[in-house]
Length: 366
Image (cartoon, rainbow, N blue to C red):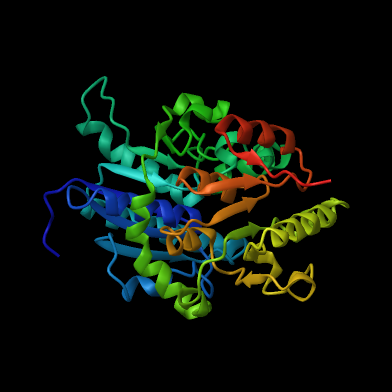
C-alpha cells in the first residue's frame, strides 16, 4: 500500500457505541484525513456484529484490524497480550498517526498503544506543543455521571496493582472512563456537562449532526437485513420504547405498572408502538408485551445506533429510561423523552442531567 501524505487517525474501538462514533467521525473527515480502525479487546468467536461486514461494504477506514482473545484468562491472557504488544509496536512503526481516538481507556492494550505512540512522538515534538494525540470518545452515561466501579477498592488497588505488576508501571486505572493519564482530550456529545474527572481533559463537542447518520446507513442496513429484514420493508413505528436491563426492572416493583400505563396511554392515541429490550434479554419477550398489547418487538441484538441510522428521516419518537439511548436520540435531534423507571445510585443525577438538556419526562395520566 503506497504511503499516504494525508494526516492519519487511529480508532481503538471495543464497543458498538465507539464503533458508531469512529465510523461517523472517519466519514466526516474524509478525504482530508485517513482513518484506520482497530477493534480491540474482542471475543475470538463473537466480535462486534459489524466485524464480518467490514469486508462487504465501503467503509471510511483505510484499514481495519481485529485484536481478539478477550475470553482468555490468567497466563494465556498474559501471553496473548504480550504477543499483541509486539505486533502493535511493529505496526505503529510503519504507520504515522496524528491522533488516536479510544473508546475505553481502561483497556491494557489501548493504553499500551497510547504509550507507544506518545513515546515515539516525544523526540519530534517541540517544547510547549499543544498536540492532542489521545482523544477519549463519548462513552454515554459514564462520560457525564462517572463510572462507580472505577472508584471501587478492588479496581483501584487490586486490579490496577496486578496490571502494573504484569505489564508495567505505565498502566493507569482511570477514575472514570476517559480519565486516565494517557488521555489528552475528551470528545463528547455534551462537553459542558462532562464529568468532573473529565473536565481536565479539554472536553470538546463531537460535532456530529443528524445528516452524518447517512454515512452509517450502508453497514447498518446490511446488519438489519441479516437479523431483522422486515424492519427495512415495514413502516417505522411512531414510538420506540427502549427498555432497561431486565435485572434492573426486577429491582423496581412498580416499573411494569408504569410501563403498562404508558403503552395503554399511547394506544389510546392510536400510536404505533415498538419496544426494544436490552440485549441481555437474548430474544425473549420477558414482560410479555407482544401477547398483552400487540406491540412490535424489535430484535434486541440490533444496536440502538443502527436504528437511529435506519429511521434518520422518520418522525419517530424515542422513549427511554435514564440511559445512553435517551442521550443519543436527543443529540441527533430526535424527539426523545425519558420514563421515570428503574432506581440506581445514578437515578437522581441522571434525571437532573436530562432536565438540563431539555429532555422531557413522560407524563402518565392518572
